[in-house]
Length: 216
Ligand SMILES: Nc1ncnc2c1ncn2[C@@H]1O[C@H](COP(=O)(O)OP(=O)(O)O)[C@@H](O)[C@H]1O
Ligand SMILES: [Mg+2]
Image (tube, rainbow, N blue to C red; front, top):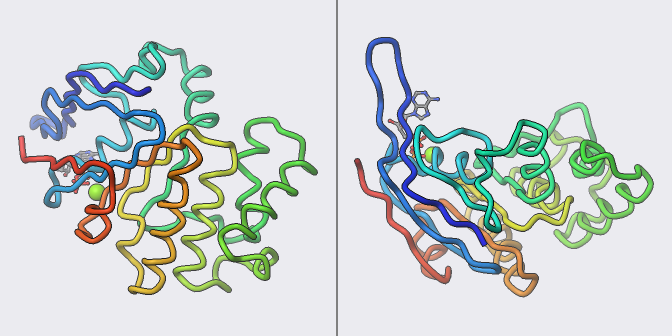
């Protein structure tokens, strides 16, 4: 479904250049759960951003259903990102001034969907992640684990093809971490592919595949 072909990424920092990835390739099949591991600074987040359409590689291609997403114009790339990719980061990045329900609804509104329908779906998703009683809460009124569950609901809002989760449990205690893990593993039967960056071996060993990034 997604084929990452010979991706390289360098960041130019004035006269220096930092090479984050070199000719990296992998394939993501439909419904597959993949763990990405590797020490700090090996390029895990950079890879996630590139697959998710957030960061253009210096070389190489990301083929989504046969088309290179970096050959898209910016409107097409936005559509790829909004319509197919759900992001969950280590820090939730919820908007402070919006309730849990509003935060989950936003991706659908950005995609031009009907507000009433979007809110109904957001309510269902929040119920799925066990936050039925928290829909009207603001992020600061939620625990870290609850905030991260809202972030998972938000990532699911537009029926993504793939979820990119970058250390989604890195900031949580064990019981919250397990709750978020369960949400991600429950996606297995839905056909959604999930790529999880994690240092947690218990989590990575439950995935279909582990890809270890090495320093270039
Ligand atoms: N926007 C950026 N500008 C410059 N260097 C960056 C940028 N993003 C990442 N890097 C560098 O690229 C390398 C890989 O970073 P990153 O993908 O965040 O690693 P990881 O997620 O595995 O810890 C690091 O050396 C980092 O400093
Ligand atoms: Mg990272």
